[in-house]
Picture 1 (cartoon, one colour):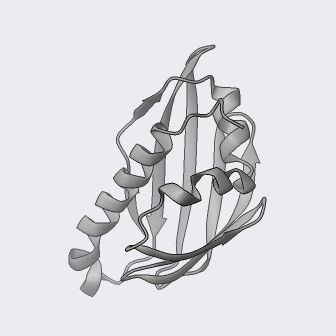
Picture 2 (cartoon, one colour):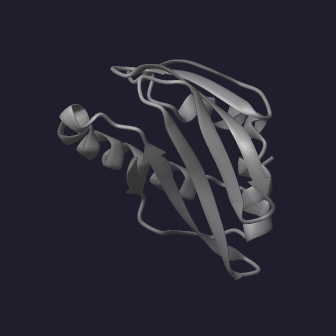
Amino acid sequence: MSKFESSIKQIPYGQETVYAALSDLTNLERLKDKLPEDKITSLSFDADSISINMAPVGDVGMRIVEREEPKNIKFEATQSPLPFNFWIQLVPIDENSCKMRLTMKADINPFIKAMVSKPLQEGIEKIADALAMIKYDER
């Protein structure tokens, strides 16, 4: 298994507020219009799962397999070119801010690891950047 981690992002909202928003995937509805249309061709979700079609990857599906309120949300791939697990870790700084790190473990064939490692690392960093910019107090 190969491991990819984002840098630690500081979020100007309390841990409980961020956890509540990220642990219910229906909250993605308010972000749909901010997604790059040239990269994402379809997006569907419910409270526990998400399905997305991204160029050039194709269809990727994930579901939440574990919630550890208010500090951890774990996902498992249900559809993907690579089997992977993904999780969001939240650590409080004070009552109005927290830190976040994204981690992904993927079962990558050694022959393609050199080709996909950099794009996966960049992708997880971009996701972390996007999650850090959300206005979590808007509902």
